[in-house]
Image (cartoon, rainbow, N blue to C red; front, side, top):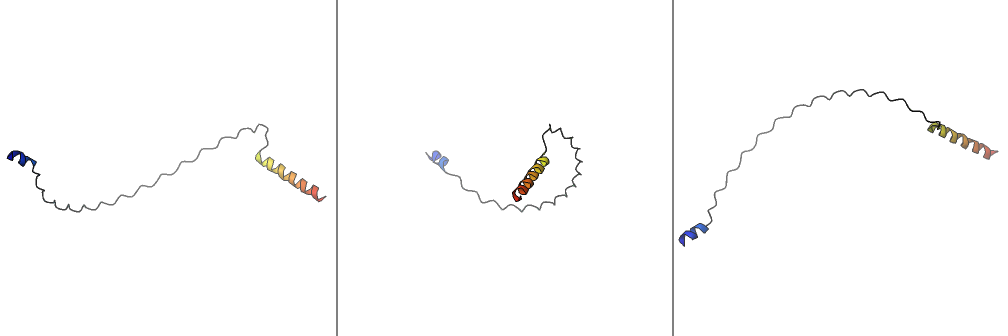
Amino acid sequence: MARSAERLRLPRDGGDGGDGGDGGDGGDGGDGGDGGDGGDGGDGGDGGDSGGMPGFGVGIALVAILAATALLARRS
C-alpha cells in the first residue's frame, strides 16, 4: 500500500521562471513608391438617334412657352 500512496502524491511545484528580456525595436519601414500616372480615358461613343422623340431641352422650352402664353392671356 505504500507504493500506491506514493503514486497519488502530487509533484512539487517548480520555481517561477525568470522574466523574458525586452524585444528590440523594429526598424523603420521604407518609403512607398510614387503611384503611376493614370491612363487617358477613351473617346465616348456617338449618341444614337432619338427615334423622333423630342429631347429634354425641347420639353423644357415648350413648358416655358406655354407658361408665358398663359400669363399673357391672364393679363388681357
